[in-house]
Length: 298
Image (cartoon, rainbow, N blue to C red; front, side):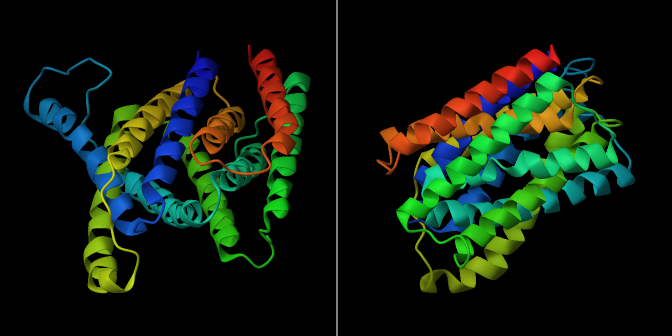
């Protein structure tokens, strides 16, 4: 069950990445991210109202329970970690080809895997190890393809931003597994989105708005709305996958990074990016790795 949910989440996450790239091209990053968090929060406002003021959602998957102050602080910490990862990641996506940022971010499960083995004591069987190794190899080969496009990884600050986004994303994934041991899905996702929106409001008003005329102007795109829709769906399914006591964060994180397949197709169809043929074998390894992960987790 949790494995199938992880694959669905990966596809939706790929759609999220594509719409993010479409929205950020020649556009201001901070307003796009603010609208993303605002729309995501507004999607959950009805659930908060119905849960706190009526019995309509009592006993359903969409009920938002009352939680103590300590729980809100724990979710606020998650919001800070994820938002920091997003800010670095959004700037990187704006300035780099999606067929570069996607594969590099796909190495995030390697960090998550190390953390999961050290913190949660997770152990992989032989099929899972084969899947992980194939995936790591394919992600490495994909990342090296960027050199053919003149992007020097050693002195490119957008590559550095991508790496920071990966490290913070891995920390968030490990923290998610910790949170889901004691909290329900709606508590985490609803308040996580609300707190992100509050933080982004301050960033927008006090950091971006006073300097807006000196930076890239903001241009409205309908894809900005789709960023929020696909992300909310992907995260909702992801949290339910982690709530399964048998789920393994190292495997879920690896499968979620298979969204690189969606971004690769988008790079070919929508962005007309280069060196696609040289990346075809690498993508095959990604698929093969996902198959071994599936077999090993049944």
